[in-house]
Length: 169
Ligand code: GTP
Image (spheres, rainbow, N blue to C red):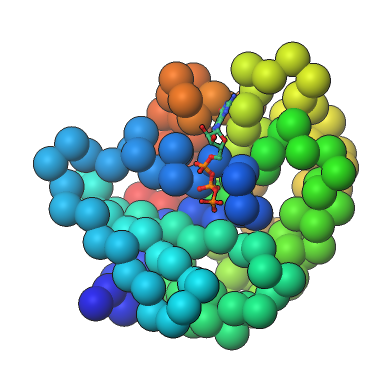
């Protein structure tokens, strides 16, 4: 299986935020997909691209699997945090999960890329509105960036990866 030692970039977010859709855009066509289920209910998806191991999992389940996902923090060089910009009801849940992550000692200096995803949906929040809701400007010690994205078409996705690649090279 894929151990935490191979992790480069973590892709996280609540369920339904668009992680799998995003991953499918990033995944090279011929890449092998590794779907690892270390324990029931906690699914990890991972693939290698340009020497970067992308690993994704979702943070729902009220932190039931927190100890499992925290095992991946140690070797993370960057984090992609996918926000469902249409899910205003759960924006505070995303904020709580994010705060725990930002506070984690293993991720102190790690750059964070945020996707305000589903930007094609009329009622969605803008990247700026998401940034304000998540109080991103309080992160003064680490590089971060937020971009509106549409994981279905790929709009905004490459731009984010380019930024991230600059940060971790
Ligand atoms: P879990 O598998 O539950 O963890 O969700 P996930 O975060 O992997 O989200 P997933 O990629 O399965 O996307 C959830 C739903 O949102 C699907 O129906 C996607 O087609 C849809 N979706 C994802 N990204 C976008 C987007 O940018 N715009 C729109 N309109 N729909 C999107």
